[in-house]
Image 1: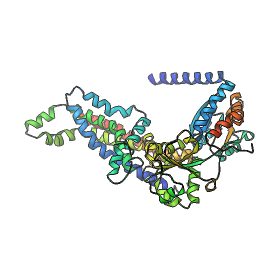
Image 2: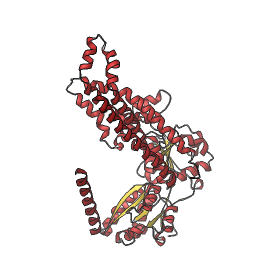
Image 3: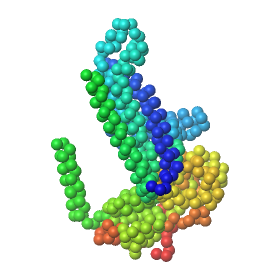
Image 4: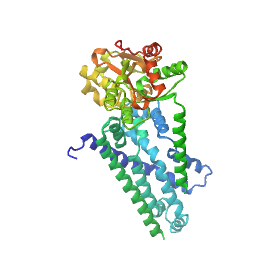
Length: 229
Length: 253
């Protein structure tokens, strides 16, 4: 490796990390109330909501990409929002990618948090209530700390899954360096144009990243299980 | 246990597929550059009617197919959007050099869904749009031609920040078609039968002619359907279809 990688690669790495970090924050902010509601409500239709949230697990990315392209476009709500700052469409923008990634990664975040909330049962919150903690305070001081392993899993999965996203980005991104050309798309580009060296270095990096993420997840869950006992 | 059963099932399917493929020798897989999608479908239908052979078409960017063919993809014929890639495949021994010929010469168009929007090169000069859709110039010849055009007009640097790139020409078209980009460079063939919007057929002086070559691949060398398809592509019936879609024909062949 005498030649260094082109600056394009570093732009793509930086963009991917930014996208994954921002998506993780947004998806935790949206996913936590959904997970809480799902774990506490007795509404008969709660599993309908749970199903809708989980659908991106099964849907091909092309289906999401297609819907997003239409919804983000000038004739959809995305166009209206973009109009606020004089734009026409949210497609081909970093904002558009964040919206797509949030939808796509939501199930990976809601599921572990919901499980953690359900696993702790009603008891800790009842105790908190008898000690006159308001529901809001009980949530923050009792439920969230108890569900910590669930949050950790959710954050790691949400981040990693966004890094690994490809189909949706390819369809709504437009391959713009620094705005929408994330690592997975850059790799696709290198393969399409027979630039094997770049493709193999980046792919190797992604494989190493995936290995570390999954291994640390497994170790974290083991540790949580030990502490739980 | 479950995994081993899954693998067993997968192997069975694979074997069945290979056996079925052998039994039906009158079928050829054709890799088609995306700009040629519509005429290729029509040609394949006519080819089937006339010869009984079946051409199974795959569409994508020329760069994508080039990479796949290098990795032993099961295509018998390659209809590229350029001359360079079929030539390189022949040099590498992956295609029959003598079979290479220009089946069509493509035309580049600047297109918008809004009528009255595109008014020739002035539209590019005024640059009143937010997004200009092209296809990836590194992987697709129409993207390269779009870049050449803008360089000839000395507008490339000014317009570059407005580019959105489709992975192939179909995606570049679709970005404009969904209204997400106001204008885009597409292939004239894609606008056949599409009367709406506004367009500017880019003068040939602004970009190198897009000579699109077909080639018989090594995988198709012994396939009757593959050789027959290339013959059919040279014939009057196919040439009429190609012209109908706005391509020029190579008079030399």
